[in-house]
Length: 193
Image (tube, rainbow, N blue to C red):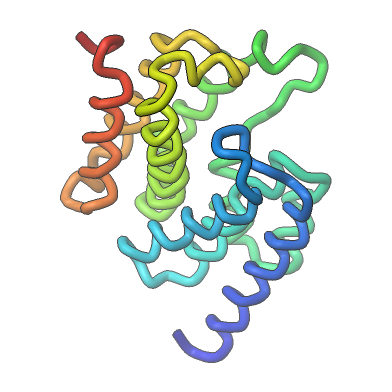
């Protein structure tokens, strides 16, 4: 990385850390910042594009904090903001998260279908980090792990995560995609039978 790129990435680390301060993950109750850091580390196995790595760090900032895409664009540039936007759902605050779950996922998958490789790297990295976490909990709880989520039906979760695998299949030669596909098949074994 050149100095400018290195400073962009380091700024993204600081920004994401500050944005997610005090937050914890639903699964594992760990500091939230560990998730975007893992997502960036996974993305780094597929690209050295600093914009993509910064977007991986920032992928949940707009969706889960008070920061806006405009802030991301002003601070990190249009491309990073676009990549973050590709992973940001319309939360529909006028209805409950469980009621809006399916439509949010359908809209996101429609966007993913038309995304470029860089956006798919961010997506796959995020979903692989999720699947790793789900897998650890699945070994302990089985399908009961879904009870804490907005969508508690493992069949619906299987539909979503297998759809992501299919739509990111252009990355199938990457170890990250192969790990993701394997974990999806393990965690959703009953639903996919």
